[in-house]
Amino acid sequence: MDAKNACTIVYFGDGGSSTGDFHAALNFAAVLDAPVIFFCRNNGFAISTPVSDQFRSDGVVTKGQAYGIRSIRVDGNDALAVFTAVHEARKMAVTEHKPILVEALTYRAGHHSTSDDSTKYRPAKEIDWWRRERDPVSRFRKWIEREGWLNSQVESELCSNIRKQVLQAIQVAEKQEKPPIKDVFTDVYDVSPANLQEQEISIRETIRKHPQDYPTDVPL
Image (tube, rainbow, N blue to C red; front, side):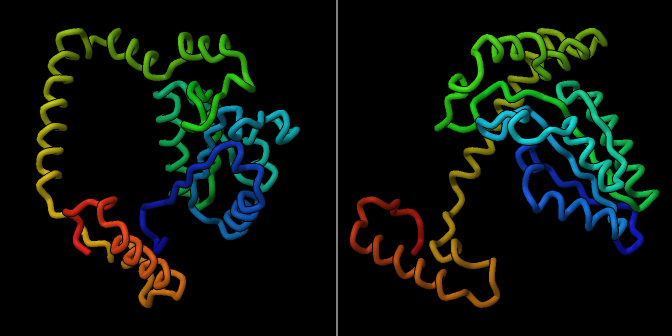
């Protein structure tokens, strides 16, 4: 990267490691000695497909090793462990000018999306256990409390100050002029392709026919 003290980090899940692009990327990075950190959040499911139905390897870390890439496995529910692992991975990527793979073993305590009901493919008791026993936020909170950096008074003051900042930011944002419709179709291509031109014509025609369904404060 122009001999700069820098590297790139990319994020993907265990499901992403089952795609062809993942394997091509690792192979290219290994062959070209690219300073890239491949960070895999292995939460055990690709939407509803468990890792046991995706691959027979020992997680994702062995896939990196198969391409000659140094690989690290870490407890993804431990914030300090993840920080340390990524810090060391960056150091190796920059100083050695080579790719590194980090596999963070974690668990998706929520549904994949609003259209997903994960209790259809995993027990509700399992989800509750992970939320109760292995929640990364709760674990980190306990640590900073033990260090004496957080208590109920400090937390109350922080929440109050942050709430004020958020409300102020919302007020400022609401006063800003809305961007025009054309901005949806610009700032991507130097010359807008035919399909985007057709889409812009279509949406403008739809707004003309149904103006009551669109906000009046958005410039056309």
